[in-house]
Image 1 (cartoon, rainbow, N blue to C red):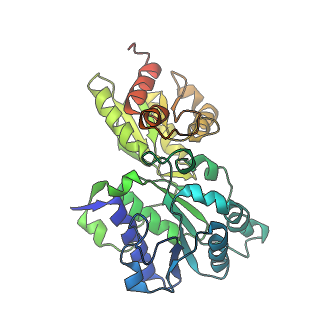
Image 2 (tube, rainbow, N blue to C red; image 1 turned 45 degrees about the vertical axis):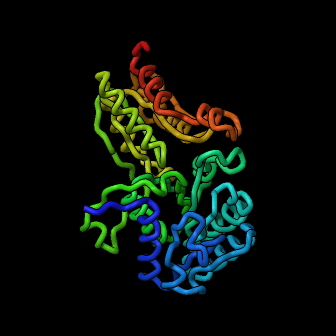
Length: 332
């Protein structure tokens, strides 16, 4: 068993896929000479050279358009955004060009491209650098959206995303980059280790309530489950991992057992991932519910800069515990 940080897992995935396929290259701000703003691309320039590890100007609309054109021509670009907030500068290229062209060309012109980088809040980077884009991009038909937490999942899903013939949004988290997780040696030595896109994972089994989460909030969900266990409430924790396509089967099967759902996400509540889960459960699993679905989300405000207000605006472990008490009809 090896200990691997999320940062190292992502770098390993990119390196292995670049070794595997000469058409794979990576581009973005500071990915080459500086080894990446978060050191995810450390050592890649030295190994693969400046033709395949490309530093770009600060012009997302421009270099994303260049990458999309390269994908149309048969290459497999990986585009790193220093933060997904900057992807808004290129959202026309992502949504209108990368995502829709396969449909509009009758399947004649695909776009095998990965857009990756840190998503959501970090630590006191204020409203313009703290948005969660999970539901934004999940809204778009033609895009696949992945948001894993564990190092093993980050490696297996990023490799699968790079090999996928469709455009993929790969949402990471700045705080999670340094988190280390155990990875089996046999898995790490397998350079073709892939995880299926669109499959959630039951991380912790339970019988009283289902908690769904993704990316960094999975850690809070697991911590909340530990606290709830001491109260006699056994929570089943599902790591969604992929947001589109969403693994509705795993969620429904869990609710058949627990009859309750609490959805966790860092983003805003309106039209969020939790809202989609609520609608899906109402349509496909209403008869299994013993209580309304409860969403734990970020507050419906731009994220404050002040540390005390930032904490209040983001979902905390105690918010998850309170939500579970609510669906389980437990008094405080």
